[in-house]
Amino acid sequence: MANSIQAPRASKKVSKVELLLVEDNEDHAELFTLAARSFSTTRITRANNLTDALQIARTKKVELAILDLGLPETVGLDTLSLFLDSCPSVPVVVLTAISDLNLGEEALKLGAMDFLSKEEITPRTLLRSIRYALERWTQKCKLEDSLADLQYFGSMAAHDLVSPLDAIQGFAQLIELELSKGQSTQEAWECLDLLKKSAHRSITLVGDLHKLSSLGRKSIERLEIRPTSLVSEVCSSLAELIKDTKGTVEASEMPAVRGDPGLMHHVLQNLIGNGLKYSRDGVDPVVRVSSSREDGLTVICVEDNGIGIDDKESNRIFLPFERLADSQGKTGTGLGLSICKKIIEAHGGEIWIESTKGEGTRFYFHLDC
Ligand code: ADP
Image 1 (spheres, helix red, strand yellow):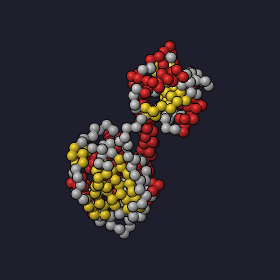
Image 2 (cartoon, helix red, strand yellow):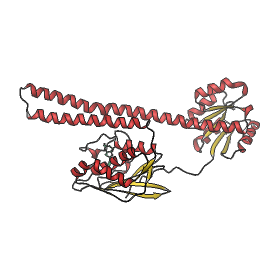
Image 3 (tube, helix red, strand yellow):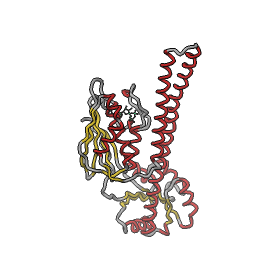
Image 4 (cartoon, protein in one colour):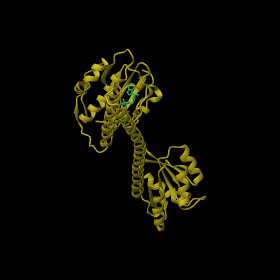
C-alpha cells in the first residue's frame, strides 16, 4: 500500500552526548576537557564567546551546553538568559566560581539544569552533573508534554461532553412541547429516540475518558498473550457489529507476545471494530489480523478493505477527539485510537499505519516485551 507512515525506531546504538563548552578562559577550558576525556561518553565542541556558542547551538546537534557565565560580551545571569532565549531546546549547566553559590541557585531558578563550580571540576563531579542535568531535562520535557496534552484534552473534553448534553436538553424540550399538546405524537417518539442516542453517546464518551485517564495510573501487566485467541474473544464482543456490517474477521496463527491481556483486548477490539465500521459503500468489510517479525520484535497488523485514510491525516487520527470528515454518520467518540496509542506506548511499543485512500488501511503495532 502507498502512503507508508513508518514508526520511528529507537536506535539501540549508544551514541556520545554532544556537549557544547562555552568558556573563554583557556586554562579552565583545558581543565574541563581533561576531566571530560576520562570518560568516553561525550564529544565536546568549544566556543569561547556567546555569539559563536549561539551559532553552534542553532546549527549543530548540541545535547547539553556547559556555560561559563563570564564571557567577553556578557556576564552573570544575563549570559544565561541570552542563551536560553535563543536556544530554548538546549539544556544548560552553568559554570560558577566557588564563591558564587547563590548565583548557581539563581541560575537554576532561571532555567539552568545544574551548576558546577569550576574549582570543583573532577571527572566524577562532571559526569554526575552531566547525567543529572540530562535526566532533569528529560523529566522537564515529559512534564511539559503532559501539561500540553492535559490542556488540549481538557478543552476538547469540555466541548465534546457538552454537545450531546445540549442535544439531550433540546430533545427533552421538544418532547415536553409535543406532550403538552395532550397526546403522545409521532414527533415525540422520534425525539425520544434521538435523546436516547445522545445519552448513549455521553455515556460512551465518559467511559472512554475514564479509560484514557486511568491508563496513566494503571500498572501494566506483562503476561503471555496469544493474539490469535484474543482475536476470537474480540470477535465475540463484536458479534453484533460483525452481523450488522456483514463483516468477516480473519486471524492467522500468531506467536505469543507479552502484555496486559485486558488492555490488548481493548486495542484489538478498537482496531478490528474500526476496520468493520469504516467500510466502503457496497463492499462488505474484511478485517485480517496477522503478525510478522521485524528487528527481533513481533509486529501485529490489523488490515481492512475500507475507506482508507489520507496520508496527511495519518497522525491526526491518534489525537483525542479527532474524527475525519468521512466518519460522519458512523458512531464514535474520536477517542478509540488515542486510547490504543496510549496503551501501546505504556507497553513501550509503537503504533503506525499504512493506508491508501479508497482501498483500505493497515494498522501496525508492536509491544516492547
Ligand atoms: P472513532 O472511531 O470513535 O471516531 P477513533 O479514535 O477510533 O475514533 O478513530 C479516529 C478517526 O480515525 C475516525 O473517526 C475515523 O475518521 C478514522 N479511522 C479510524 N480507523 C479507521 C479505519 N480503519 N479506516 C478509515 N478511517 C479510520
